[in-house]
Length: 436
Image 1 (tube, rainbow, N blue to C red):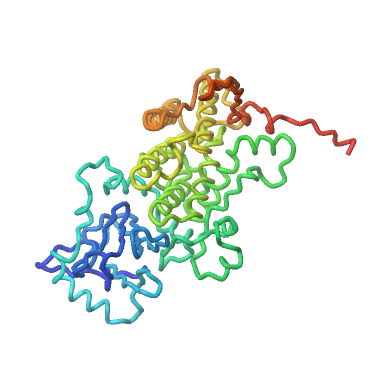
Image 2 (image 1 turned 60 degrees about the horizontal axis):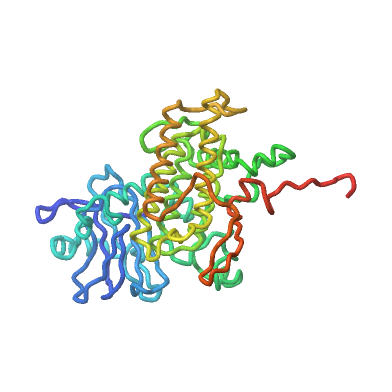
């Protein structure tokens, strides 16, 4: 992504700056989790004092407009002098585009910058609340993006020069599932294709696996998670995927690209309402929260994953109208996944207490690492119970009578846990292969 350098001047301090040209009035503009409407008098020219790390800026013609366009930018922590990024509003595409190569716009903006520094550029933290616990606080954004890297953005968006994404950007595996968009229409469109992780929850065992190995791979998706982490580590060129889980935030450690994809997918749902990213976010949830053996081997990864999920749900509760998911009711698939993971975690603890770690379950950490996983799960469970009344553990009534308003008693049966108990459609079936 091309950037300029800000010249030091006594008229304004040098800091990373984003200049936005020709913005129309009443345009919805968002930077990270902060949003504003451009003023009528044309006095807004951009944002200054950008912190280091990844940022996402997006626009929509009106707050209620369903189609949004945005782009990622990454501010290096040690850039000296700081970068100057320029984007121009293009009415035809309703998006902010890069300056054409060789244009005079760059030099004009560099010369004009001192004139608008004080009154035309909004400081990044100017619209942020003083409450650092608010979902719209810049500190929360830093927490939600700590694993997003230029490598990850380039991989997802297929370009190292332009990290643009829109509401209708789509991954091939989700193309047929977008409501109202046929396969031919999607192919005919010019929207950027998203390169997701390619998670297939219907095939989570190694190629060539048969019998018990395939069954175990379907029930415990640890092999699929570890294989994905290995492939991403090799692709990024940072080891073999077998690095130990150490460090405070997992930067550069085992599974960090998966955490980064989890963060990126969530934020693109919150900001531009990208359907394909919502599906990717759900796929990652379905992969990680159905692992068992990998919990012992990579406890730091699962601790960070649960911490991120907790932060995301808190942020979505504030930033997304109606919430990211229907958490007020039964929570759907997320509640089932978390309930299953809670029971899996309890079984892992029981096995460790008995001194049986299972075959191939050597741990990269010690008991303290497992305690951190359990502690993070308890904090998430406590927040869900306090906020939405969820009960992820304990005893449940499977079958009983429900009294209706007219006094009639109707027998009801809950089937949510059939998969865990191997009942109903999940019950084992004996197949006679010789007779077929």
